[in-house]
Length: 97
Image 1 (cartoon, rainbow, N blue to C red):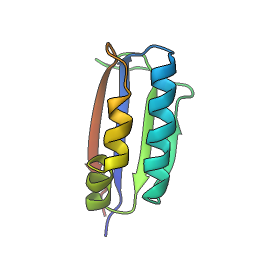
Image 2: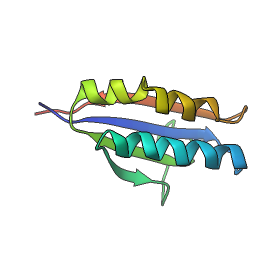
Image 3: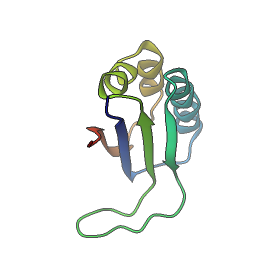
Image 4: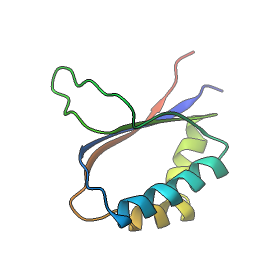
């Protein structure tokens, strides 16, 4: 099976206790699925219509696992902690073979 990816770019982001709580729980959900962080913060250069901001990329063993992790109870718990006002572009993308 082909890998799949969570790709998330934040258009607005606050540094708050709520966001840190989200990050902690989301990382637990990702690791529980056996997924790997490929990018998590770090340097970003926005091109074309992109907005400069934090970016995260996670690799899953397959598309179904990426979807299941997003829909999991643990990740839903993480999403519930996201503070209001955070705007992000979140996609689940299948790999190519």
